[in-house]
Image (cartoon, rainbow, N blue to C red; front, top):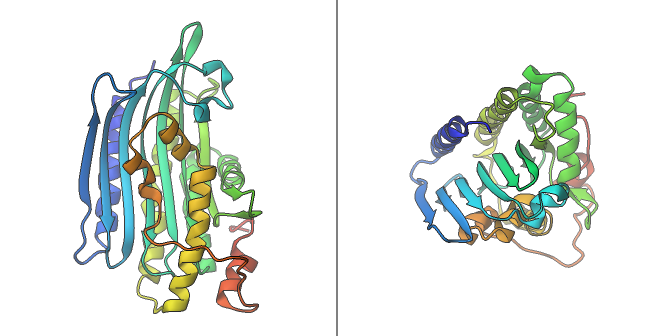
Length: 308
């Protein structure tokens, strides 16, 4: 089995770099450190390093979590597409983040990079990488969408021309709200089980995961810088709260990471840090035709090639 020490070291460093990069936007607010450890004998053993910022001037809530856990039985969310591993023990480590800005003109962003090892008697041990990043705007700007996908493409470019289109399509399909018949946002990258089939060696798979992680800040920070001081009022905040409802719906109904954490006995506070601090639902609400809010639906909540 591969040596996971370099993976752990990279993930801890990535978390620290992203914390520093986002904290630089805040004049006063800082990330609190919420480290935790599960004792021997617990259903899920291991440790985590939570980094949470709330009530900032730029970020209403930002959570960047590192975890390294071990369990005696893979939960259903991890074995639905790999039934041969059902009942096997596992080790998992990763960094997961969700950023909810205060200004509605700054989009919400999500990123995750992770590594798994699964073992089961009679089955060859399996390892794989997964992750990606995606963007959820409330008021769309073409230049932001293009920049986001340019960085996504750059993250994939060293590994072959076919990787970005493949991971983009995977992201568009994964972050699709079936019950709403709409995407969660403008997509980005998503991949899973990378290396599990034995077709990619560990060094190359690890390099791809690092490239995705390293491109998150260059993709997101310039967008925050462009939009954070845009004037807004109650109308924009109300729309932001309404659209955040879609984010909650996806995370609680479809998101593999949320389901994995809850099913495996993970730390609830860390799992649900992805929820926005303020959110609302309205019955049969629709934006006024021709409004900026309608523009989000007409031009941005569509699966499209942003680099065409």
